[in-house]
Image 1 (cartoon, helix red, strand yellow):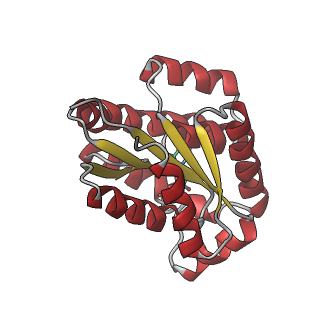
Image 2: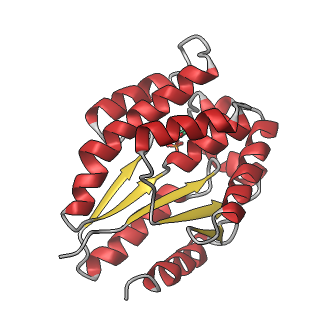
Length: 207
Ligand code: TMP
């Protein structure tokens, strides 16, 4: 059994990542692939506790560096305790967000210096990265409408449209910067159409 594959899924709020990951996992399992579905921030007991702090809007505003380091603290736990062992056991790991989210939300969104994020990334992950990243892209307004229809919002979902516009452009820029890793999927279409596209893309990696 070879090493499994690590695929991360990115995009703004309300793009339908979670639904699409669930559908892809079902498709892969039908083909006999052992799949682990996980998320960031989170994925481990400690990581989920850190997620609770990060998304809690009843807490006072935190410094952007604190937010960044909490994201990476949860990520180290995720990589060392869950992702790396799963890959070594031959499993495929599908993660709802990974480090690109920090470069985009904390870097482009909050305006932190990209070089400092790179430094923290290098220090904590030592080059570990997804094999492939799927970016679900759609207009910000449409995604926010979906978020609002879900009810209660978290600390990030309270951000302004301008913030989410920066996030959207930040992700598209990152996809252009790492074209060998990223695939961009138009998520503004009907949900089944998006799934068909996703499965077509991932199927081409199966052989
Ligand atoms: P989710 O809504 O996709 O579960 O993600 C939780 C929020 O955390 C989302 O608004 C994006 C944000 N986030 C960051 O700001 N930086 C990160 O590194 C990660 C993983 C998520």
